[in-house]
Image (cartoon, rainbow, N blue to C red; front, side):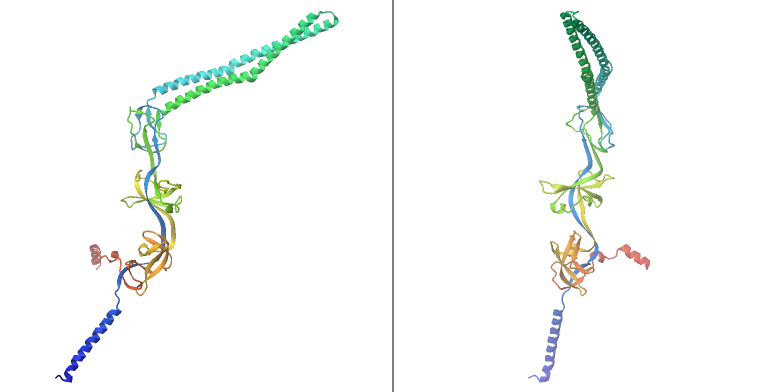
Length: 431
């Protein structure tokens, strides 16, 4: 039989073990695990709403030159890739037959001018002068006939002249009046109608000759191909000696000092765009951006795609932007300065201007909070209400994080990157 004294140490050890176990268990229950997260402070800054889309480049001006006449190419004065000026002679077609036709029409014009001068200055005055003399003669004959009739009428009253002689004088007077009236009317006709008709006829022949000469000169001019714009010759498919026709382009000239990026954007984005909005053009696989401006927002939808065509124009002094390229276009539609912004990665359940964020307080506890958002870009988000400047929001580790969870703030990997060998060497030099 064991004595009472021998069981006492065993009871004490058992009680001690129970107390230690219960105490550790209680301490373990009171300690909560910390979740590692990354945070960023809400700050005042500038944010812009940007519409991103793909586009194809076109030249600011382009001319596909097609001859108006059919003739062999006599000579080219420029080659593909050369810069040309407006009005510069690019090529010349065979034109000997056109030169001969022009010379022939020039001679016809000289003849018409001489005929016009002769009709106006010589033939017409002679006709008028002759008619005026006829009028004067008829007037004198009428006066003589009138005097004869008056004299015989007086003698007839006195009984000194037979009736038949008076009647003969009356007939002669009537004939003289008719001749005078006819001559006078002819003169009036020459002055009023004949002169005008003669001049008009001669003028019509002269105008016709001039028109034929102009047509011949135009045909001759069509054989000289001039550049309608400043630019660069980008295509010249015809060779010297080949037949040039109006069905085949002779060459193409493009002005690429500026380019236009033509894009099709959805209706929801198009309502935000205005002519003059700032934009940028970037090439695929390149970080370089070219400043641009919106030059056109189509007032109508494309019936096939129900999108809106938008033109973005950019200077191209180094000709790095080539027509036909596919590019990325970013159009800034709205800019807000002194906005409260946070990283876009901090937004949770974002929809229609509302979102949730996890705010880390001074005790290191993450609490979920609803905020109202404004402009949201892939990198930043504007907070209109629900957050104060300087408050920290979780940017990494917020998804699935319970409300009021104790968190441990970690620095981004870039901030945790160990010093390089060069930095260490510099530090050793200072030491």
